Length: 203
Image 1 (cartoon, rainbow, N blue to C red):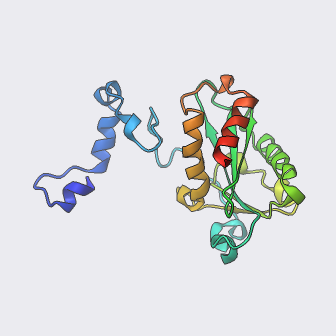
Image 2: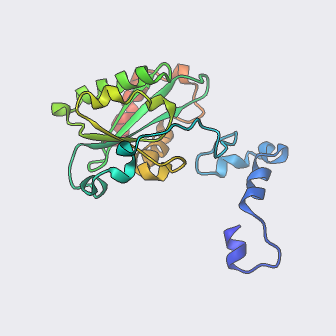
């Protein structure tokens, strides 16, 4: 769509029309969605996720500049990634912004308390509990972030619909799916598979 505008074609097409065709019956038969960045077989609508009101103190715009410019070790980004075979099971992916070191753990469900307890387990594996801050999106899975702040970790949240504000973990997820395919059945993802994928990401 952008190329046609740039080349000043007489007949133009919008990106929305392209997406509609990709996810139409004919587009699905051709598996055109596999050419998209996230290769989702079903479209995720922009406003389909539940929105939460985040107090200003926790918004990413209040994250100190020394975190933004990666001047200090200990500042992380976190996200969940889901697979086939389970609507609830997922992997927590946590990445340190300066070193790009990744930590991954399985979650059997997406309840916020469970997710946060597993993130605390990750924090305990980091030398000296050196998780100074972590940045999430606005998913309800992170609603119980107070469990982290109680241990001294500062928590920040991206703006709604702005996952690029935690681009490091988004990129890490994309690379992770080279080693654990997005269409993998979650029930078949063992701890050893997760450990192996983590080692490949980090080494």
